[in-house]
Length: 282
Image 1 (tube, helix red, strand yellow):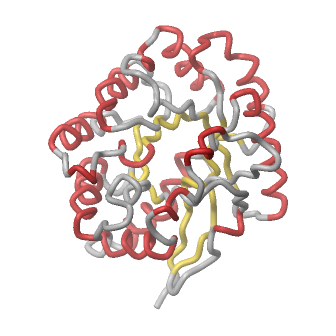
Image 2: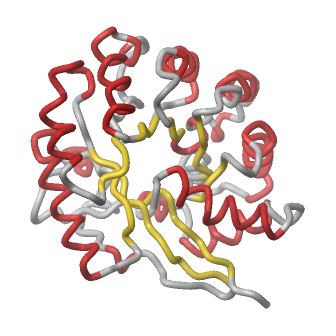
């Protein structure tokens, strides 16, 4: 049996002794340091060859320090090939000094300004749109981390930023636990019409009932994502260690591999590895 190579497009590390993460106060199971060794090197028929670190929502003023810390981690774990950093894009052109700083750090490939907890309309404010548009000038992508009801805003933002590479985190966080699919299905299909958007197959287990989810209930969401984005614009992500609230790393890889059984070897390689390498210029 050949070994499948994985580029995990969405991992987090944090050291609660080094930086401050206010949100962890509400997540006691996660409120401790997580370093790269929590990501397995390999499983029965797969190996994790590359990792993309995504900003872990430390205090905004610590965003650059987070990048510098993860860069030191990459010296010890060469799997860390890219960083998606924080930037306060709502500042519009005033965000330039931050983007200038990030551009000096070669592992930084993109930016994420978390939107999932912001009110509707936040990402459509003129200054925010300008901030996102600037990313194209810096050669940086934008990770869209939203909930399903924010998809219309995301579509409107993407429409205004045709030169920016967008990466949708966690398939838009559908309400799997509540079983609602219809609006998410149609709006995800609409977002997928924009060629500058790719999508991470990640974060599903924590949107389901974390203690009682089944692979069968996740498959319709996975299959719809694959249908609308296609094998060229979907990439594997684990969202570890948040993943561990509901699943092991090995369980999630196994579930994704099962979902890809009908895909060719070349298509599986794109989804598991090369799409992330391309989207993040690794």
